[in-house]
Length: 197
Image 1 (cartoon, rainbow, N blue to C red):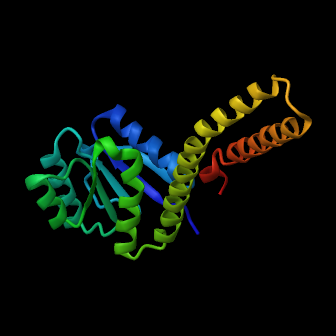
Image 2: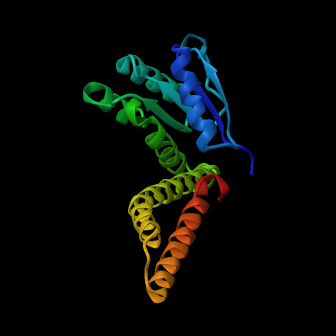
């Protein structure tokens, strides 16, 4: 299967670069480039177009409408809050929106929905990337939720080992310390699970 081809349309160079970084991190097999909206004269020959509309939602909705009028049938996502008239115009153009403050979490899911709607061969590839990102986020939350109480248990058990204890209690505490360390190592193995998968 070929790589997903994307174009990021935006005049804010720094924000367009941020969009491309999110795409590169979450869709490493994708190929993207940036295009100034003034240079968009013909229908782009790509699978997806991401429009930077964080500064001017109305202008980005107009650009989305123009792309559809040119015959672009691929995935179309506008980075904007998608509220009010802008949201209605985006819906009329068949474009999705991803809020700028949620870019890292919303951009790829919106692209996946758009690709599936367009019947693209890349929909499954982007959906797989979306699932891997979600798996990595779940693993990270699990790891953080587990580490704090586990560190407390380990510290208490290690402090108790410093006291003079009967052999059976000392052995039990050593087993607790060993089990805590095993769980910590298991948690460390979850690091970067989304990238490994």
